[in-house]
Image (cartoon, rainbow, N blue to C red; front, side, top):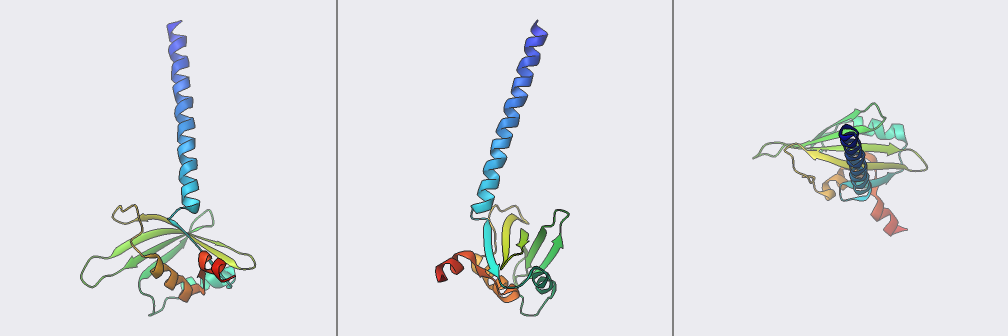
Length: 146
């Protein structure tokens, strides 16, 4: 009898841990989809044109970047800023391109190379980069202009 009781307690604890983990993951996803780590832009360029523009490197780029396609169809965007008097600053974003009447460009901050929980690249620098590369405007700015 005590063995059955301990087995039931272990199963109940496992179910409780599983439910708590699911709730925590749901909170993380909700925060990522609308939190400070998420930036959304709109561009008149088609999906393929966005990929071509990101593949084209130019001397006007303030920083180096790599854009690598992932198996799920998303992209990892790795920015590196070389400062003249310090070590390089690296930041990793998940990039998503959704085609439609206008292509929606979404950046989700993943991590900074040295473990910072916040992006080291200021939003205005990313805005300028995406404006120049993809002719993209931030979603808030687009809504304000309507």
